[in-house]
Figure 1 (cartoon, rainbow, N blue to C red):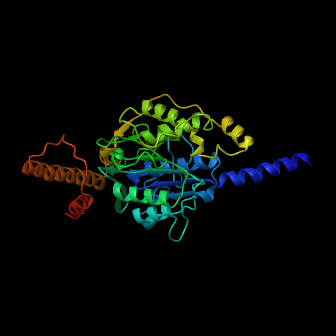
Figure 2: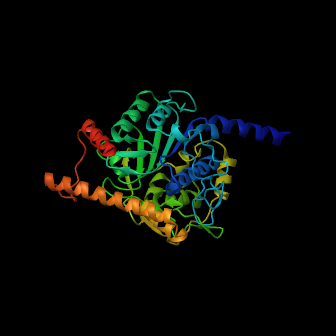
Amino acid sequence: LTIILLLTVLAISAMGDSADHWAVLVAGSNGFWNYRHQADICHAYHIMLKNGIPAEQIIVFAYDDIAQNPQNPIKGKVFNKPDGEDVYAGCQIDYKGADVTPSKFLSVLKGEGEGKVLKSTENSKVFINFSDHGAPGLIAFPSGYLYAEDFHQALLGMNSKHMYKEMTIYIEACESGSMFSGILEDNINIYASTAANPTESSWAYYCHPNDVVNGFHIGSCLGDEYSIKWMEDSEANDVCAETLAEQFTTVQQLTKDSHVMEYGFDGFKNEPIGNFQGTCDSKSSIRTFLRGVNTRVQPTKEYAAIDSRFAKLDYLYNKYMRTQAQEDANELEKELKNRRRIEQKFGSLRSQVNFELGQKQEISNWDCYKKLIESHDSS
């Protein structure tokens, strides 16, 4: 009877503590060549869940066109590393297909609209993880972009509404540093880490020829370098002991192809990563013990990586080399023509305004920038 009462008290305590931890996980792409982004996010989902955040307090955006994709050689399953576990199994996706949009994402952060939204409070710790493509001042969704200015305004709104005590944001995207550089304040209790600085690519990881699971080449990169490094680091260590500062240093050192950056408030960097990727600041000693038992050894071998800007080209090339099909040759040629068209277009623009490619300008007029992007996309 004493043991039963003790376990009941611990369970009630754990339920009360977990109410202050939330995670919002976003894969912003679609298409089998972007396999890695949804793999990243489903992997992150399992990390949050294992470390104590209740499923009802983890909100997931993913187009959900990978597991059952005709090109997937292992139907119904998605993997984030060679010969790894199926991360799609049990991954509860809340917003799929046409619902994966910037406006829906911002509504979720603000706690507005129908469906599953943040119901965090001034005592909550919130973790946001985004994986997809990016460009200066924006991150991409399947149809549309989330601009740094709009994201920043949403964060300020969350702050004014007291929707968090502390927030951590990890972004995997090219030029992801531009979402925060010169924008994110250091006094609103938000700490952000990005896969790349404001002017460079992030890199896809576990690419051909390392995209092998159970003897099958998946035919697409399985993960992204920065995302893989932080998640495998979380799994290799006791998340209740390793701090945000320690994880940043480790991931910065292990990410070889881009410069991992940090922005915002650093006053809680000495807190365990499990305060955001789990519920380590709960009172449940049993749960903390189990996390330590479940740690894994982090791989030290280096795997094939591809500049994310060339990931689609690499995907199409390997697809054609595997099938030798005319339709795949046509698809590859179409992508090459599109790249040549873009290079010629921007080469002409640079010559007209006497602008060197190496020059980088900060965005000062967001309305003008958005109109420029819209004009390019419609041309």
